[in-house]
Image (cartoon, rainbow, N blue to C red; front, side, top):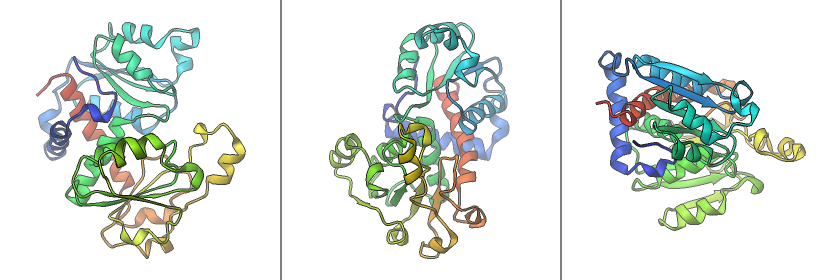
Length: 304
């Protein structure tokens, strides 16, 4: 039995195989319509989510399986004080695979050590979000045709953004990647990512506060929101939330083949006028997320 807690638990061959499987699902959905008939996915979401939870549920339904679970901790026995470990043991009696989101870093890892079925980390605090990273990789592959030889700009909240940290780790394993980190000084990439991933592996990167001066050299611009829920101080959040707003005027300096990604939800960091730009692929990114989660569920359940 295998779980997925951190993207680095998958080697490069496994990531590429998942992407290939997702591409086959996109091309031939009818082949997969009954693959999980009789199987159940439990979605244990201890904090709010729209895309991730519904994406997992849609993925399982489109594989012919069923879904049970909860969408907030107050509707579970966590409200009575039940531990994550005990919840994992209990839910293992009812389901075949668990997708868990939790505000505390490490909670899905604890669940995986106590469950008797696979556990998928659907986001733990500011730490990891491996299925969003797989979604991002599939998006890049489908939109750019490759995963190497790219200059990737990451803009906004790079300190608390778990999607950013996971994507850096994943893309660093492909050749010819360069990162441009665009953020306020207070929201820079944390040291453990800088030293433990970038410098350790000799990945070229630059840090800047200037979006306008950087956008023209990017193959990918990955926007993120400043996350109110990660701040202890409301004043700091309000001061930093509008640091970067992508507008059509700013897009004039970008390459014709640059793509704009965002893990969503957005607040106001991407102007709605960008939505009609063919380079905006964040809603296509949402759809890719369903397909890669279908591929992952099949892999963890050992279904060919």
